[in-house]
Amino acid sequence: MLLRLLTLPVSVPIKGSLWVIDQILKAAEAELGQGAVQEDIAAARAAYDRGEIDDDELARRIDPLLDELLVRRAFDTGED
Image (tube, rainbow, N blue to C red; front, side, top):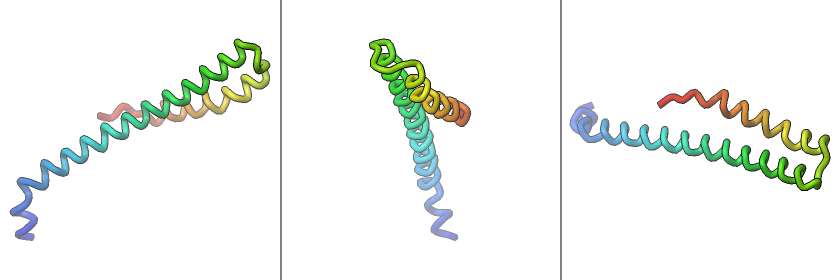
C-alpha cells in the first residue's frame, strides 16, 4: 500500500496517457475499417459501371458491405 502511494504521482499520468493512446487507436481502427468497407463498395460499383457484373451481383456484393458499414457507424458512439 505504501509503495502504491509513493508511486501515485508517476503512475497516474502514465495510466492516463495509456488511456488516451488506447482511445486514439480505437478511433483510428474504426475509421480505417469504415474506409475499407467504403472502398469495397466503390470497387463493386466500378465493376458494375464497367459492365463486369449485373444488378443482382452488385446487390449481392454491396448488401453485406452496407450492413457492415451501418453496424460500424451504429457502434461508433463518438465518445472522446
